[in-house]
Amino acid sequence: MRYVKEEGGLLNNFAIEPKMYEAEPPSQNQKRNYIILGVAGAALIGGLIAVAAAVS
Image (cartoon, rainbow, N blue to C red; front, side, top):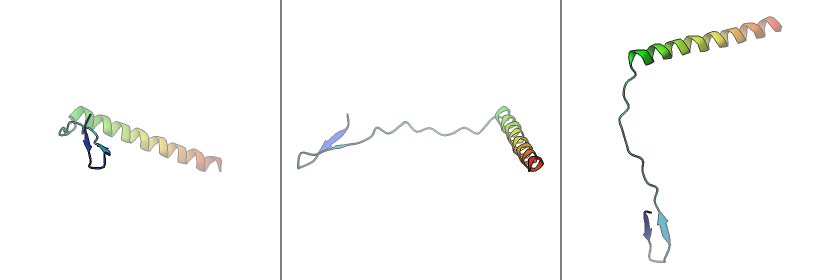
């Protein structure tokens, strides 16, 4: 455990920092999946608005 004992006998605890890594750019397959999910989400929202307009 990482801690520092100060003059008054108090202990200061320090969190263990996670290992850093660089993010990788998305692959073509991931980009295609993001586009498909975006279109599906937009269609869902559009459908909900259409149903709300039809009901009211």
